[in-house]
Image (cartoon, rainbow, N blue to C red; front, side):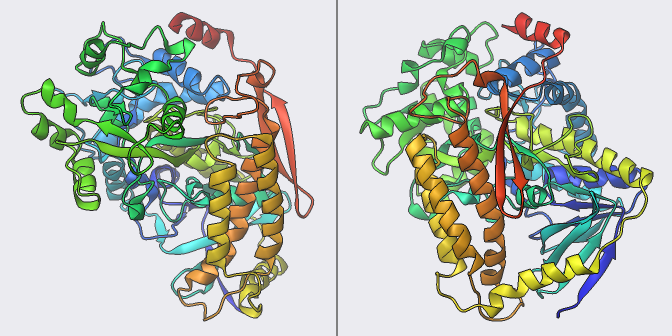
Length: 604
């Protein structure tokens, strides 16, 4: 039997993106020993790919903005399935977290009078996104890392956690391995914070990084944590569609925030044709008024390209399916047209959208200052995930916390653009604070050697099997294919049932998956283990999607295309049942506080 190394910390943070770094910084500031595990190298977290900005009601560009408007926008965007207490904390605390990031060295774009500049984004009533061109996530990670490395945090790069460890009902630590050497590691900790991001790589077309496979959600589920809202997957309306090598790569909503418009093959702005009833009072069908809004006219209504992501994605799919798409199966996103309005348009576009300019120039041979981009929906974000307490971010398992995309509740049925980066800051900080407090208030846990021995045996099993059901990469590709086709943007009872049947069959194949070679940096072995997590999250999504018999936010059912009043107050909870069972249970949402209901009414 293999050996393992044991490492001790008070708080272990799994994940080194924005939420993980902010949690580690806060926990360390509280005087406890903090370890942080990242699957890749520090600085390679998926947060760096966030482009558009950080949503916070700073009111630097429009003084009518405040936390109450941000609260109402976020609740409406989430179709009122959000955890209202999380939304309250989030909208109240986001401005301070952005100012704190600035104090730590973040270099935001500025207004003429030197304040943090804010831009328009879909679903936000006023310009609200603090940004650094279209590289905001990169600047956030740079700032948090530069600040965090001086806080005494131990960082374990290129390590993967495959299971959490428990002592009775409490979390006791985590079990994983060094990706380079294959050596096993046991991290003993009184509190664990999961900040592992999303699961976009379960689908074929995705904007997500290679490591966004839902691993953190799966290990929390396996440890007994409850999941919620798993059916709500956000498909960003604008990903690259050509060439095939970069299909799905994100095109920031900032392009539309700066004036980009969507057209079909006939050159028509098709978004004018379908504006939801609850957004008609704020949305213009007049091109000139939409442009005045982009330019900062406080009396103008926003263009329909800045409606919520779920709606825009479905409108794009409608045009493609109707045969009005672009040559490579998308539609056209045109920012070059603003040369009709601005004399120095090419320089303006390069300044505001430098990454987009270089991305299309280098990867697709397209100059976005002169010609339109081809775009189409791409799997982007998980609204659902691990259920957490709004104030502390603790899961239903004592000692286990979660923050960021892997944690659920803030975004409800659909996330507004820009809310993700401020989510990382607000709830990363809270998770770190309360994890540190928990570690101080509770006694040491015990790591049980038998539990570790069983995990090592399970982890090494693929080396001892003979391949007979395809290798891990083939199974991963098959999973991505059927999740894309059967559990994608539009869903139906028949397709979801077919997906669940395929998932059940694949679970058996995964149990037999094999790998060869040795443990030294072996991607085949890593994928063989990771498939267990991917299939768990895929099943949670498919089963919750079949359970919710309505259409709402990021969940659209062709057989139930309307919202249901009955389902409008229900969250679907997913919990492990027995050795291999999955319990799906709708639960009624907690009623909103009267003063917050009043905020919603006032903002309508």
